[in-house]
Figure (spheres, rainbow, N blue to C red):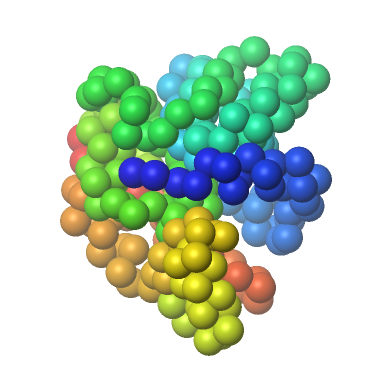
Length: 209
């Protein structure tokens, strides 16, 4: 699995300054996620960016390990954690494929705004399933842009073809649900914000106990 780390490194300072596009939807996703957390929960997030969501959930969990392929993103995340005095989050530069094979290590795995960027999404979902304890949950928020305007779809494909943009898979919500189910998960929460500018699917899927 490969994501264009150089692209995200260049974007990191600007990304850190960006405001959440839909604060109400973001807060709802945080609340839905926290319903599955507890004081001793061990959480893993891949594609964590500058760490905002990991840091939001840290006070409600035991420990959070969060990785991103871009060193600049992780540098900003570590700085934010230090400034906030949050000590139960470990930010690492890394890729999901490079994580140690430690079955059942986590109560929750999170992937926000990343599944549509993966060339081997099926392989990643199988690995996430293996990382979770029985009864653990996989939380994801994913752009499902197969129905986006033609210009956007053309830019996404052409930009990647010439090496200017990372891979952006144009998913449908139904296809993503099917892939997650095929990996062995049972979908517990399925929500799409109404009226948002981007077609986003938020899912909480459980590994059967």
